Image 1 (cartoon, helix red, strand yellow):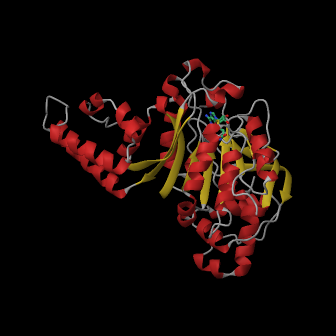
Image 2 (image 1 turned 90 degrees about the horizontal axis):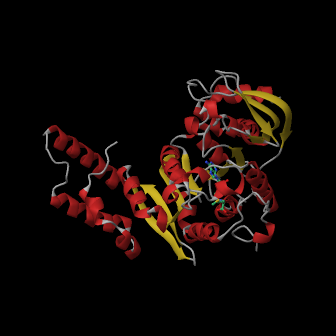
Image 3 (image 1 turned 90 degrees about the vertical axis):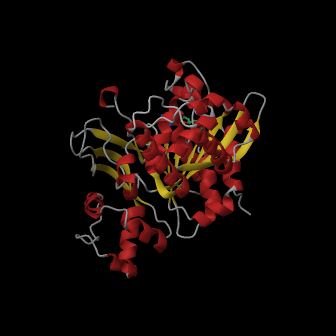
Length: 279
Length: 123
Ligand SMILES: C[S@@+](CC[C@H](N)C(=O)[O-])C[C@H]1O[C@@H](n2cnc3c(N)ncnc32)[C@H](O)[C@@H]1O
C-alpha cells in the first residue's frame, strides 16, 4: 500500500533548506488526525506557505489522495533551493504542486483572495533578534524576530484574505509566540480556533492550531464592533469594558476555543482589562 | 507553471493598480498530460478569467479555446471540458518570463518556477 504521507527517505535535501523536524512532523500529524474531515471538506485549492523540503505539501497531497472533485496544490517559499528541493520531493512521491518563489503569497493575493480552501504553514517562529529575520539562507527558515512573531504576524492577514468562506488554516505555533493572543486576534476577524496537536520536545512546546471562519463569532464581533462604536459615541471617558462583558468574553472563549489548560495558565489577566483593538 | 497559475498571478509591484493579466514571454513550453476531473474543472470555471486564459493559451501555441466567454452550459460538453482541461492544466511555461502589464517589469520563469520576489524599491 502506498504510504499516506511523505517518506523521509524520499524527501530531497540541500544544506540551505530546512529539513523536516518535529514541527514538520507535528503539522503532518495534525493533517492526518483531521484526514476524514479534510476529505469531507473537499478542498479545491490548497496552499502551503514556506514549503521548505516539501515534506508537508507532499504529505497533504498524499493524504487527500483522490479527493472527490479533485484538488490543486500550490506552494511558495522565499528560498530558491527550497523550491527546487520541494519539486524533487513531490516528484519522488508522484504528486504535483505548482511552486512559486515569492514572499509569503505575494502575487497571488490579487486574484486568489477568498478562494483557498486549505492553507498549511510552518512559519519561521523562533524568537531571535529582529535583524536575523529574512536573511538569506537557512536562517530565514526559523528566525522569527521578537517573540518569533515577525513573519507569523505578516502571514495571518494574508491567510485571512486568501481563505475561502469555508477555508481552513493549519499553523505551527510555539508557546513563546503567545498562541492565545493570536487566537484572540483571529477571533476578532471572525475565526474560531482549535489546537489539533500539541507536543513538547526538550526545547519547545509546539501547537498546531487550526483556524476557520465561524458565523457565530463573526456575528459576535460585528455586534461588539457596533457596541464599541456606541461606547465611543456616548463619550465614555473610560475605554474599559464593563465587567459583565469581560466575563462573557471569557466564557465564550473557553467554549469556542477549547483553550487548553496550558493556554489558560499563560493567559495574562490584564489582557481582559484592555479593549480589543478596533483597528 | 500551468496556465491555471498564470490566471491567478498578478503583478505585486508597489503602486501597480492594473497588475493582471501578466504578459507571457515563452521560450520553452512543455505539455504534461494529467487525468481530467470534470468536477474540478466546473469548480474552477467560475474562478477563471476567460480572456486572459485564451490569450495565454494562444501565446503558448494552443488556439482551440472559444474566443468569447462561454456560457456555463458548455460545462456539459465533453469536448469543451477536454479543451479547457488541456489549456488550464496540461500546458506548462517551462522557461520564459511573466510581464507586468503596467510597468513591463519581467518576472523570470525558470524550470517552470515563476519568481515573484520584488526588489527593495518595488515593495
Ligand atoms: C520552519 S521552515 C518549514 C519548512 C517546511 N514547511 C517544513 O515544515 O518542514 C519555514 C520555511 O518558510 C520559508 N520562509 C521564511 N520566510 C518566508 C517568507 N517571507 N515567504 C515565504 N517563505 C518563507 C523558509 O524558507 C522555510 O523554508
